[in-house]
Length: 379
Image 1 (cartoon, rainbow, N blue to C red):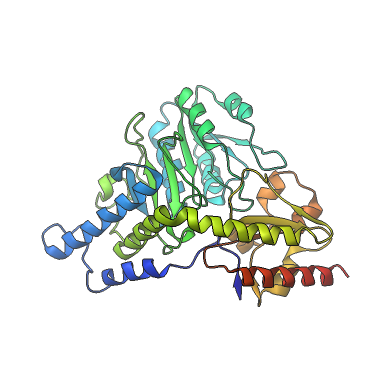
Image 2 (tube, rainbow, N blue to C red; image 1 turned 180 degrees about the vertical axis):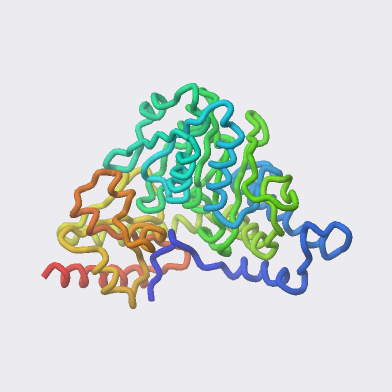
């Protein structure tokens, strides 16, 4: 099977697996055990990983809070800021194309008294910065906008958003799950106050991620969402998953060193597939073609149902209709719907996402299989 669903998850790299293995048995200590060498050994590994992740996003080591992944990080950021700031305001601005980890958390906060403004993108998936600025009120406490969309790959103007947030003294939370490890991310230059990511999106293990929280200018304070032991300076209690954290750190280090080289090759593969698939009658691209991730191809084949295409090819190619969370619920893409695309485009859209282990031969095989299947389904 040719795997073209790297936005859903990536395989652990061999370097990551080898880095993790000793911490399952040989170096099995609890990082919170401060009275013996096994605990010190585990804590040292965690601190190294914290530095490796911080270096990838240009953050301070101590601004990194380890979590079970970006979904938990999004919950901690949104709920944590809302609870600590509710005496100052209750208004949050987000976008209707955000990941469900943000949208569902915002829906929960609405039940707790939050007022949420949902910006709508244009047909290319981009937001209007004037609309963002106009939406800010004296009650606004947080702007929550992703770095890059998981379905279309569209990249938001993050640096400009950060500047708007700072000018209005509003916190800026960025779900950068799809961006980190694929394109440069710099929380300092881009004015990001809180940032979420997951290791399994860039060749690390599943079940581990981080929340970055700015420590000064301005300092971000949160109300913890998990109590019990005061781990990680009280921000997130629970015994640290040392093997996974080590894997996250190693994956971050590998991406920092090799990202440009890897993504250049991936970009070339994506473009070859795109050029070939656009020759199919009725094929159209979704999303902003200039501002998007180098590995994502969201394409519609009008006149067919995407689910039927995926079903026909699921023994040969792994790819998706929408995001993994949307596909699991078998609902139409909320991202493409929010972009106000024609129903025929939404129904015929698939996402191909490429990664560092794909080859030219695989991509050409996948293209021919998709072409043949689309032509068959149109008969």
